[in-house]
Amino acid sequence: KNQVEQSPQSLIILEGKNCTLQCNYTVSPFSNLRWYKQDTGRGPVSLTIMTFSENTKSNGRYTATLDADTKQSSLHITASQLSDSASYICVVSGRIGTYKYIFGTGTRLKVLA
Amino acid sequence: NAGVTQTPKFQVLKTGQSMTLQCAQDMNHEYMSWYRQDPGMGLRLIHYSVGAGITDQGEVPNGYNVSRSTTEDFPLRLLSAAPSQTSVYFCASSPTGGRINYGYTFGSGTRLTVV
Image (cartoon, rainbow over all chains, first blue to last red; front, side, top):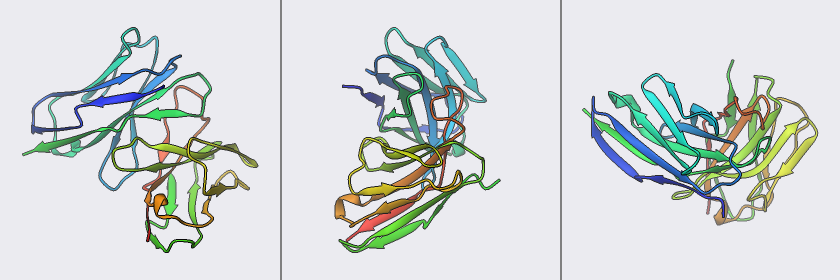
């Protein structure tokens, strides 16, 4: 069964610290992986999109990595800010051209002052 | 550019009532879709459309209808609301659904409670 699992479920860090969120997937074949940020009460916003040939992609203080061999991805947040408090969702597409994506349940990050 | 606009933001329905959740985008996106988000679960696809006049079912289509008469609008109809349809509903659009380099633009959601 195609699944996307994220860990941890929730995380609390102090402002200015770094953190890494994990995403493991069993989707096969693999097309692309996306990370979204979802603020409370809002819709998800795209952070990065990676294909199977990409290992790393950055978007400001957000850096996503992908290991297609082990089917793992991580999202690293550098020098966290209070505005980083949100849920981070990993989404995997199993086939090029498909309109159907598999969403993880997200990691809820809380950044404290 | 307003992006993706969903209305209403909140709605309470009684079991058996029907209603339509509205979704409009002003980005000329071909692809539009509806998702529901429930606690402890990832977003699940209800219905999607790859262009005006074309719709298809997603993962959880039962109890919902859609139509796409224009590029801009993609309403979601609940035919006879049930408590199991209590959820947060998101509309999303993309220039083309399968293209790798395009992410989705999501609306801000509709929180629906069925009592």
